[in-house]
Image (cartoon, rainbow, N blue to C red):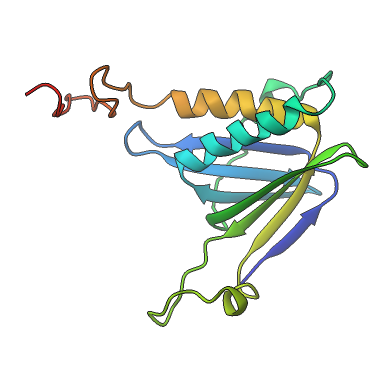
Length: 171
């Protein structure tokens, strides 16, 4: 069953990670019009969204107002509606809002490759308009969430588990 939500005004757009480093599940969360929608995603998707939103904000007027820190925390319980596939980000200069479109990952059920035309009708989608302040707060918070994982090895750049790791450069 596909979902479609479009929010002209978004109360909160945030991200978070559930679980212990090395076993974390990343989620995006949109809260608007009395609804809370969580989307399971990858750490790399969160980092890429933060990076691209920063580029969009660099071309927009300076941000003067940001949401309070509590608004950036995930609202519990977190039950993802779907797994994130494609992301669309744009700046609407007329409404002075950033438009974020989050689409469900397209998975073929019959063993065939997904057909863009056939799958597009069955894919869940959320479109949310956020303020520049919300986007700036998302970027800062996303960077903190992504960085709070396992430390990286100074030699190979791979994550280090609690019990260490086998570094290919330390032969």
